[in-house]
Structure formats: structure tokens, C-alpha cells
Length: 101
Image (cartoon, rainbow, N blue to C red; front, side, top):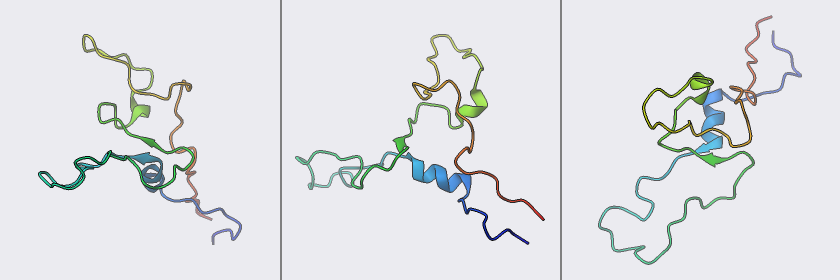
């Protein structure tokens, strides 16, 4: 039976959806729509939460799998990692709590 004091955490993919934001396909509206021609494009209309960031579509989907691996293509740039962190621990904010008693 589960411990009543156990803290609930969401699945890792749900936590990632909250933390990493994707760009809208057509942020100014549907193709050819007359509205919004002079309005600035806004990336986000809700307040930023701690740890939220945009995902680059030109980076590795799972940076942890490519940690410490050299890029082999000529002229390849470094993976888009966190600027001030050497490592990214997977799922450190969503611990595995699926223990069986």
C-alpha cells in the first residue's frame, strides 16, 4: 500500500510540457488573414513561470543522450545546452515514485 505522506509528482513528459515551450506555427494568424498585419507578434501571453524556456528546433531532442559525445559533421556547432551548466540531470524535478511495497 502506498505511503500517505508520499509527495505527488507528475509524469516526466508532463513536466517537460510545462517547462519547455514550442513556437506557434502561425503566431500572426492563418496564412493570408488580414488581421494582425501591424500588431507585433507575441511569443507568450501568460506570465513566465520559473524554469520555462523555448525549445530550439535546431537542437537535440534529448540532450542527455548526447552528453560528452563529439560532433562528427564538419562545421557542426555545439549542442544548445544550458549556458552555465555542464550537465543536465534527467528528471531531477520529477522523481520516480513508483515504488512497490
